[in-house]
Image (cartoon, rainbow, N blue to C red; front, top):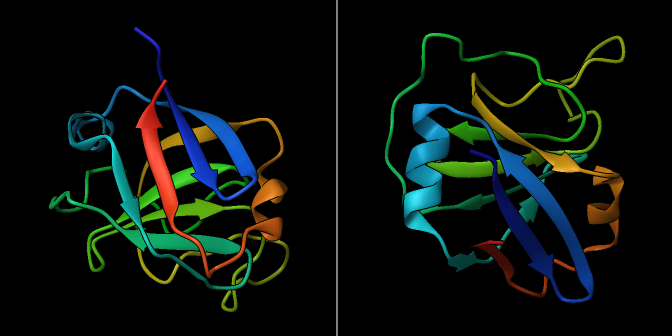
Length: 124
């Protein structure tokens, strides 16, 4: 079963898909939600109403377009390029994350998002 989401910040909108993981299941069950967000390099992150630990396959580096869940936040992270601690072309979160989905299309669209607006995530 494919589970798709829509992420919207003002005029910026993107669709994504959730993988078949416990984190994706928890995020899907919590939808919809809305939050203020911040940028950290080429990453958007925001608090979500989900509380989980790291999964066995949690990652220290991710791919462009990945959705990551950072338990320390707890935060939903959208990666669209290097972060301040990335090295040699990698994309490195602040700590290990559960990768639970990815953007369909170009994740760089979030570079146009204004942090003065709220980000909304809903099932589609």
